[in-house]
Image (cartoon, rainbow, N blue to C red):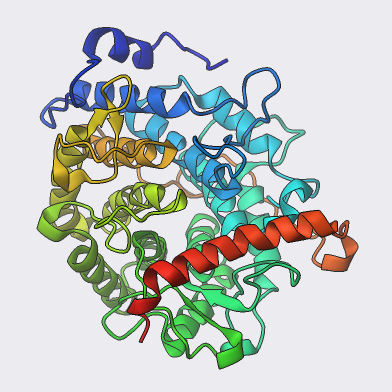
Length: 459
């Protein structure tokens, strides 16, 4: 069960919850921000069954009406990251024990965030989202696990170390989307897989002071620019296939791509003590992000929000967009006056969109529609609304910026983490015909969905 269940979350429901109206939010009141976020966090966690009898800790079940498809494994890891930030911004510890349990249950047999149960659909980005959550736990001094379990920092290092050997010579470098050759999408190199690696490397460089991480970061930055997945105006496109030497660029743009690269660049700006090179790169990314994904000052998922053609994954993208922009203001304080205004307008809009569902407060994606609920609901929508609302605690309290091992970080690392990982796909249990077909169908479904929905955008 959730620790401290009848704490702020329950109080928010009893005192401030409404059954037939949008979430109440007053950005001039820290208590209002906390209560709104607590209500949404509570509603989000009603989807999670991993702490109940028969549930699998750490993993979300399938969303209705297709529970057999399920939430993808990566989104479960992303949700724990959002809840770590929820605790960090609000001080509410209600979910901390279940967060720790959920992450640790999914670390895998080799403590590298690659559990064999998910080897039939393991993408580099999937593994990395769990790694970024572990990195956040280290950066926020989230409660450390017992000594017999892997530390947060070592888990992030394990993910980085396993991925650092995966770039190959196709397309001149870069990581592939999928980890194993038998997975559909292994021939695709995309911005999110490489952006997550870039992100973790930049954060490890800053946290540990070890410049070898930064050297990898520079290489992957040069690669994405040279291959054209990030253009001269800092627009970031989805990916391309190795069969064309990555020339068939799919120019669909997603907010989480901008977010993951922006946070990485902010860490590099901080790590290099404000170098002009990284300042220029960070400014370019921020300007591109605001121009594309904040029309009228409200976060907008341009690829799928206009006609609500979003996949389950895409409903969560604004969570990373808003939280990582908020962290950017801490790592590069000069960006505060540029970023904070859109986080405020987006939070107000998101709260108004939390006006649907059976309880009258489930959140939709279409924040620009105000209280006219768009009819969608799920973990991603709740995560996104909660995320943008908690960022508005920054003006009121001293939300500590990400720590390092020189500024109070307590998570003990292991530079050799991940050395026992199974990198040879033949060394793991080969997939059965059914399992391989299932994984192929799942990945193909994503590829076809992206191609069908967004192929017209490719030039």
